[in-house]
Length: 56
Image (cartoon, rainbow, N blue to C red; front, side, top):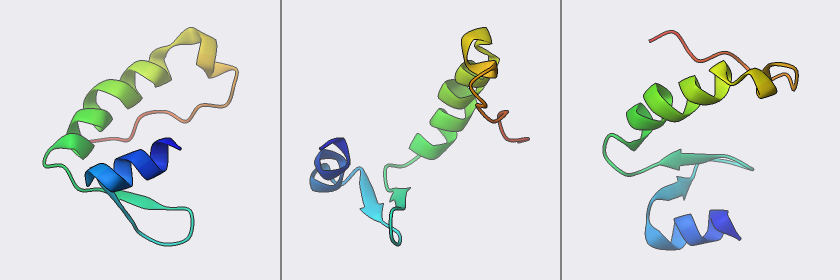
């Protein structure tokens, strides 16, 4: 449902079976800097096997 909404809005596009790529300028960088780093540092997710943020 959310994937289709993002596809319809042009925020992402299909990049292979089960994969997407972000089409909005700078959105990938924002997500990497803010969302991924915050989620990886969240103590509740460390035990869930959440991967560490990428080295930028």
